[in-house]
Length: 289
Ligand SMILES: Nc1ncnc2c1ncn2[C@@H]1O[C@H](COP(=O)(O)OP(=O)(O)OP(=O)(O)O)[C@@H](O)[C@H]1O
Image 1 (tube, protein in one colour):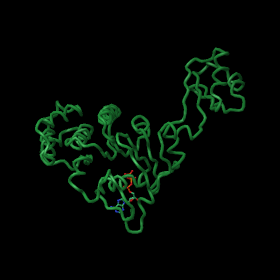
Image 2 (tube, rainbow, N blue to C red):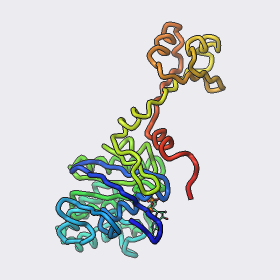
Image 3 (tube, rainbow, N blue to C red):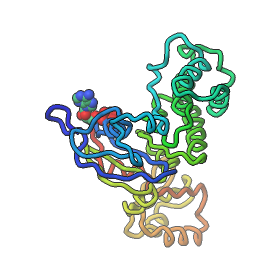
Image 4 (cartoon, rainbow, N blue to C red):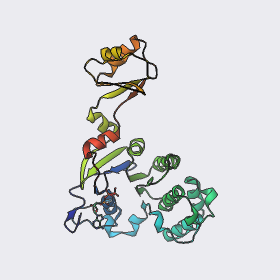
């Protein structure tokens, strides 16, 4: 997909299985939204093809529109309507049976806000309402572009439960996110994009394993003398500061056994690499324009 001279999405190929929870990750400007919009049928690719089942989404055939749900940006709600009225209005567009709005309010935890105008909902409540609107016609495939952007930690966890429930109902969920913990917690597979290309596509666990990163074994301050820590660590780096002693190693079982023999497991924590480490390794740490 090109915008003028810019190849925003360049030679991207992937397949999403029915029922899968799939994540598109990448730094700002990687091409996630453009990819999603092509898949949703909102943009016509300048080259290449997109298919959902038998359909080419850019044709916007009514039959496909009934089967896919696209989360709206909260700014695209109808003005001055309550949460329930928004759902009723979207429902009417799709010809869904009455009563469906109540079901959706229940599913996203907004029953208590049914009569509140959307402009008076909090950011998290608006996000959940926009997801409810995307689900009003019971679609098989749901597309969500950064659904947890600007949510506080509680609202984010709350949203995760909603998204898990949607996927558990057998729906395919495709989302973009900047939160690696979110992708790790929710997604069956993720594609990591940068500069319009897919750099890796796999399960979060496989991506983390492939990084082959050392683990960080930390102990409470005073649990081990610095001499003992160096003896245990051997050639591995040891870091001592006010929060305790950390040994960074690829031989976790040897180090842990040695620590146990020295009765030095106070305040032990063992931290492996995460999807965030994979992401930073692949896309670099510098800010992008
Ligand atoms: N309508 C447009 N016209 C011209 N260029 C665009 C347009 N939309 C996006 N771009 C450019 O295409 C590239 C990819 O943008 P896109 O929005 O797909 O990235 P993204 O991965 O979703 O980014 P973010 O994480 O910031 O939302 C960027 O360089 C962007 O500036």
